[in-house]
Image (cartoon, rainbow, N blue to C red):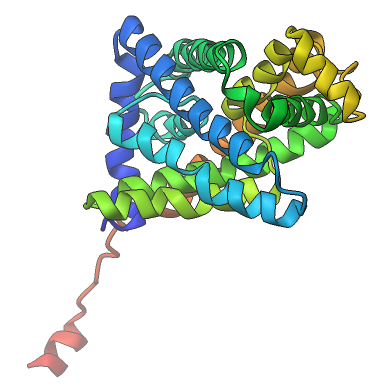
Amino acid sequence: MQTPSEFVTSYALIGQKKSTNVATKLLVLGVLAGFLIGMGAAVTNTAGHALTNPSVAKIVSGLLFPFGLIMVILTGAELFTGNCLITISVLEKKVNWLGMLRNWFYVYLGNFIGSLLLAMACAYSGPMNLGNNGVAVYTMKVAAGKCALTFGNAVVLGILCNVLVCIAVAMSLMSKTTVGRAIGAYLPIAFFVIAGFEHSVANMYYISAGLFAKNIPAYVEAAAAAGLDITGLTWWGFLVHNLLPVTLGNIIGGCSFGALMWFAHGPQEAPVPVPVVVTDEVKTNAG
């Protein structure tokens, strides 16, 4: 396993490569990451829809969702939230701010596309029919709850989330074995899911899946029968009330953690040696 200092040095070069990669590669790998993170979200909705105890539902989600990030890391996909660690490369002067922003743009767009494609597939191809349309109702419930967050709360929950996500990425990359990389990624992600923090890429699936489900009359009827209010579940609520503040929070949390790692463990300048003046008296005593 790498030490934190070794990680900072190695990630500075990783971030440099990410920032100079071909745009089409970043976009395609971003689509893959959005799809894989979305898979984690789809699984948690399916597994948790019939659980009435909220603590049990949170724990089940926390146990299942992290496999999405593990797949992202092991397949070399590009995830926006984890790429906030490119801050290390910027502080190491391996890449400039524009290079980091270029990476973020293509990767974020790819993550959004991958998440939307999966959400559409899940909403329109039948998986949400499970449990008498119970998965669809639960999906809309989760999405509506996320759209109801205040701007400030969404920012703070986004900050807390991406500190843990970047810790997960760092711990995974510090390991030199596949099992170690998986375990390193697993625990911090489980923590953020169980704690209820907000992840922008996961929300690209969670909320868009609820919005697509809202277009299907049978799902809307099931939601009404369950007493679920979905009037606040709109694209405006998704993009402005959740995705924008959560993304800002993710950037603040991820970049802050990257800067902290660089400040605490980055290469330090060697101390300048203090010249020793040897007097005649010292020479005499030494002799």
